[in-house]
Length: 112
Length: 112
Image 1 (cartoon, rainbow over the protein chains, first blue to last red):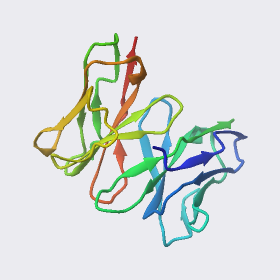
Image 2 (cartoon, rainbow over the protein chains, first blue to last red):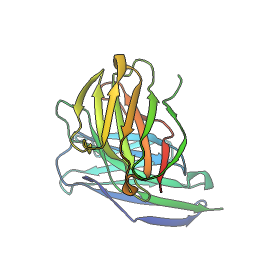
Image 3 (cartoon, each protein chain N blue to C red):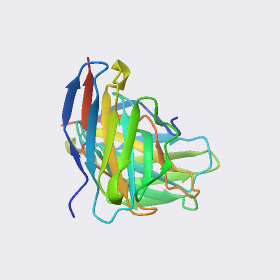
Image 4 (tube, rainbow over the protein chains, first blue to last red):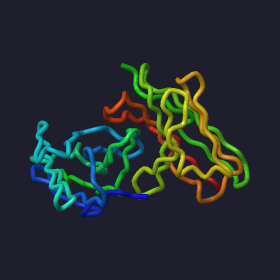
């Protein structure tokens, strides 16, 4: 079953613009992670935010987490054509097994 | 470090045939995952190994899918017999305990 739901399903922007993707989830989490998937490739980890954190930055990436609303957002600033990919949020519910449940993803297209 | 290796890269079979996928995780990673990713969707966990023991196979269709992890290193996933709805990308991932997942590039299976 899918835990996270990304919004929007698809996003098309111009190079240099910012891109914002949202993720909502249903149950309590230990942490939330964002992954990128280029066409025909595997997923690559971008950033992890723990349940007791509200905001995290990594280069041009900014992630926020609102546990009261069970939602997270990923902001990519000054986008580049190379950022074109699918972006997935994944939740770790904690417990004895380290298991991630992925959402359906947002397809981001950055036009040069 | 070398990444997660998967083979074959592509496979086309007819329904009711059998197929096997192979995965070599990152050296030292105790946890290995097999995910199924249907076109346009996020990855869905099929089975999770901790060393050579299964810790979660709740979403594995056990009447046709099987997996093993020999000596806690390499893993194989088998489908027998295949159905049309098994057409998907099969992703292998590995991790150290509690750390982000590292994915291979997957095997794209087409069942005709």
